[in-house]
Image 1 (cartoon, rainbow, N blue to C red):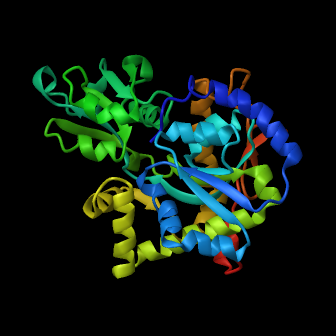
Image 2: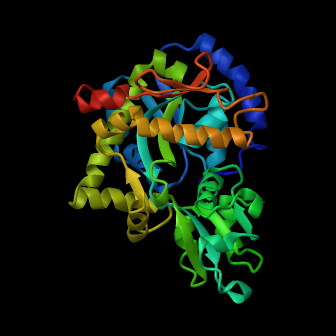
Length: 363
């Protein structure tokens, strides 16, 4: 899901600095909005909301229109959002910080989508001369294929720490998520760090040995529904409609009847798998169907601690911008008003307003 960001986003970030300034000056009430998405198990409820008419129902309620656009490459969806081509996007917490926020685009997370609870994994190949390499510690000295500077690298860093290793103990090979499954099938590749659906496909190989996954760092790899903060400020109806539609689909998914089965079947089709495959991926995805819990987590000490870990990783890997002199370069605000980083440069906000409205039945 997460593609190489550092080089691919340079142009987008530069454009965003100009575009965000214009948007900030011209942001005003409007009626039509565009949201970008890419295929990932946790994101599929949004396109289903559009296909089922649920999104239109909520948009109609507030007198607006919301157009969804699928972008095949995840990072391209982030680039286009950052450059001003979309009003919102489905994105990870780390990428929100390192791409739009670090690029100067003030961005608000209005819904907790999920956290990866096993969808991201480190996998070794146990075959030939590496047949004995079946534990995480065996990764030392190996080349690891992954999407560089992505949450896969974040996961790998956390994994290495758990066995007293660092990134200096391995070699990283940047590989597109689209090429990961094929790469693992070659003799040259002995270790990968990636996410679903690639994880599920790779683990079908009898030579694949999962040695670490995101269930061991719960809550740290988050997926969020975010929108441009200036746009949201002038158009709160967008936040209400998106969160309302999202939570309605969540409620359907939690059911055990034909409506739930039909919804999941459509999501599976949209994501290029079957119902069994989607359900398998959902087992390693911790969704937030309850608005009260989602709002509470946004403001929790746990989320603040997690965000601190993520921002430190981003700074250490040069993802807060070339001019970032410290981990505090970009401010991150939480619903209680607490800010990590520069209070004068807040560009990433956890906004629980709409989840709270839903919890109070006020949407």
